[in-house]
Image (cartoon, rainbow, N blue to C red; front, side, top):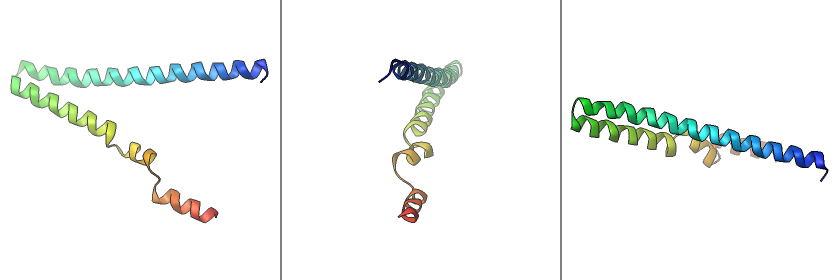
Amino acid sequence: MPACAEDEAEFIDRAWRVSHYAAEHFNYGLRAYYFALAALAWLLNGWLFMGATGWVVFVLYWREFRSEALTSISRPSDHDATKGAAKT
């Protein structure tokens, strides 16, 4: 592999890592805001705080593991299957 191609591959790898870390930390920041809003409920009532925290956990779980985007990435859709069948 020429030196130029190695440099490009290294640059792409570093750019991917920076992008990955930026997205990961952005998500951590959003989660911190969600839990901070739930923590504000503590000023009103302890039970309300527990309920708000539970709700945030539920919403984050639903967005992380039950989202339509994850479903579309995880398994092929009927639309993809018909496109593949049309090609053959």
